[in-house]
Every structure is written in C-alpha cells, then in structure tokens.
Amino acid sequence: MRWRPFFTPVKTFNSEKTRDYMASHEPSAYSILDVRQPREYEAGHIPGASLIPLPEIDERLREIDAEKPVIVYCASGGRSRAAVQFLCGKGFDNAVNMSGGFKAWEGEAAFDDGLPDLKLFNGDVTAEEALMAVYSVEIGMEDFYKTMIPKLNHPKARSLFETLAGIEISHRERIVQEYRNVTGEAAKSAAFEKKAVESVVEGGLTTEEYINLFKPDWNHLSDIVDIAMSIEAQAYDLYMRAADGYAGTQSGASLLKMADEERNHMVRLGKLFDEAE
Image 1 (tube, rainbow, N blue to C red):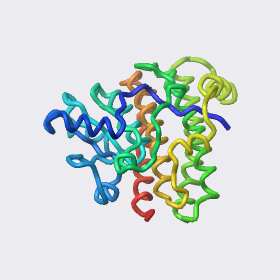
Image 2: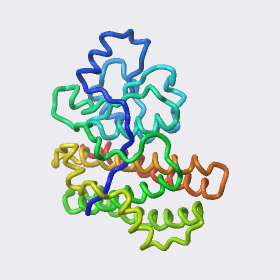
Image 3: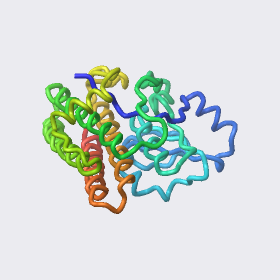
C-alpha cells in the first residue's frame, strides 16, 4: 500500500549549520528544544537544550519563547519535524527543524529531511483538506503498526501496536462522519476513502519506504517507536488544524477529541519507548 505522509514546508538546519548558528549567536538570542524522551535527554543532549517531550509540547507552549528562533531536534529528525509543523501552526514562525537529529549531531548517519515531493500543503489548510489528509495518515499508521507487529519481539509492544492499529480503523470511520458534518456531503465510507486516497496517495511511499527514510536499527525497539511517534504527531497536527477551522462548534469539539486521542497515543508510545531498553 502506498500512502502519503503529511509534511508541510518547514525551515531546516542540518547539524553543521546548527553548530555554525550557535557559534555565531549569543545563547540568549535563540532556544534549543529537545523533544525526545527524558531517558534520551539524560543519556546525552545538545548543550543548552531544554527538554519538552513531543507528547507534552502542546501543553507547555508557554515555556517556549515565540519571539526568538527555536531550533528543535529529536533522535533522527522525524519527531522534531512534526513538532516544528505543530509550532508553526501555533504562530512560532521562527521554529527550525534540525534534520538528522541527535544522531547526526553525534556524527551518525540519520534521516534526510529533503522531502519536497512529499509536501502536501503550503501555509494554512481548510478543515476539509486537513480531514482528507489525516485520513491518509490514519491509513499509513494502521499499515505501519500491522507491518511492525510480526517484526517485534517485545510482547508489550506487539500488544500496543495491535491496539493502536484497531483504533486507527475507528478513527477513519469518525473522519468520514466529520467530513459529512463539515461539508454537508452524504459521503459513504468507500466513496470517501477512494477520494481521500486518490487525492493524497499519488506519489506517496510504501510503509517500508517511509520507515527506511529514518534508517532505523531493527534491533532497537526505540527506533521503531520513534517513527511511530512522528506519524502520530502528524495526525495530531492535522486534527488540530481541522479543529481550528471549526472552533466553537460540535464538529470542532469532536475533532479536538480525536486530536487528544492521538496525543494519548504519543504518551503511550513514549512510555513504551522508556521501557524499550
């Protein structure tokens, strides 16, 4: 199955440019934000970086100075890119993703952020567009979890991935209902899926291709969970964008509820990450 991850254009520094930027600016002129899990941060981090794990970023926005550039990083670049997408949607115009993450900072090969062919949107999106895109991401998440289950030797990970795969199916049914509510179209699930898939999947990736962008170590569960969190964060961002378009309405409340469920998925994955090794 081919599906298209949700990527909006974001400003990006590689690790070398990040070092140059830090060397040429006073530390008070910018912020470094680490969106990994506490265990990762404690094992090593960029000097001066503040820690806000990805699942907590929406609740801790006040800790980030929106007036200063903020360079965001994770382990390999996926979670931080999703964090920057979210921050940009909340008015943090000076947020920058450090491609390759801490692995690249430490000199390891890591995720390459050069993904111009995968960008779906430029700037703001309508609620309808966000729903169409998140439907594709939900398809991708289900396929990701099902692809990973037979590869996992960790019983708790298999159980969680099976649970999350099932939830993605129910989310797609609710997306169809919300699309009916916000557009007035009497869309049937099969017709909506065909329309959604045709609109965003062309030129997309298979799950294996998407995973290989991050070059995970298949012997480390943390690498797999890292990817899962980055995909869940994409869905969270899309639900929030859709909800913003219907603030104060029943549809907006429903979309916020689904966004909160995606955030809860990130929290559960974060806990699994902390137990991984």
